[in-house]
Image (cartoon, rainbow, N blue to C red; front, side):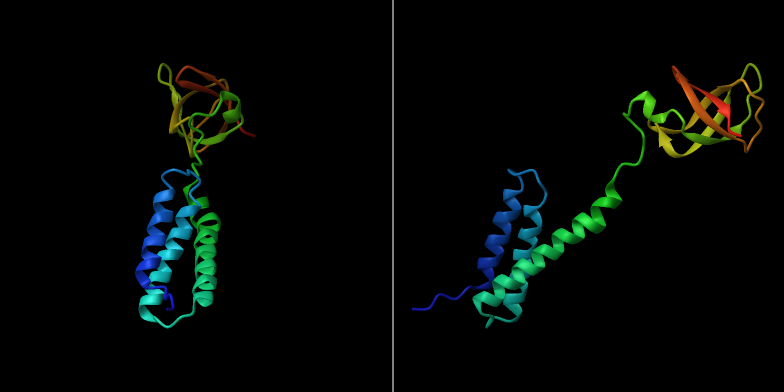
Length: 151
């Protein structure tokens, strides 16, 4: 009696690995589960594959899925905002004046990447600034930035 791996064996194996990801929070086992599902499709299309070829194809497919995640997809999901970061991390950030201060109204500055969760802030500046000037954060006072004109 010869044991033949069927496509549904790979489906079950892949689903078990994907479900194991619920218990092991590393987000790597998931990709090996997807490799198992990929093998299910491959074995369904070509049922005469030997077990050794199936295992090598599963290892290669799973590795490619994991590599694609860590090298291509995960870097796109990085939060580039400065939300939740300490005050010291945003000191020195530069932005562009979009509304010059005119007493009693404060000016508005816009940053390319959000600073402390927002990309536009009211500011106070001792220097004379006009729309389009670049300013740098020197201090934070409540909901207002204290900036200086960037030379």
